[in-house]
Length: 156
Image (cartoon, rainbow, N blue to C red; front, side, top):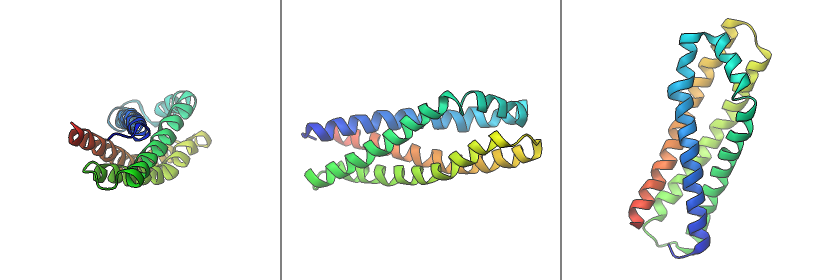
């Protein structure tokens, strides 16, 4: 990996994807299950105060940045370094980030819908739906990050 632009893009994609992976796993493993302990109404109040305020910008920067950097990395690798052994994980990473982004187009409106819901049963249905989408979304971003670790191992 000699091209400075490819290196910068790959470093950016790896960093943003790693942060996004951690944030996504935090939500899936720690935050979402907490609703079963504190109740969906309390969880919704927390989500509105955190994820749907400052979290919106944070997740948007990570998600959009990781997607753009991942796709740019794959394109740069394809255009300038088509025969390199590290390309397969970079291409797969781009595919996984597109899958993650597609899931996000479903997850974000679902999660934001809680702003209009106060009924506990409706909140329960909403969070269950979000959890299903979030599970797929987390899987794709973890796979994306694993592809970048794979590429790094090839480069070592």
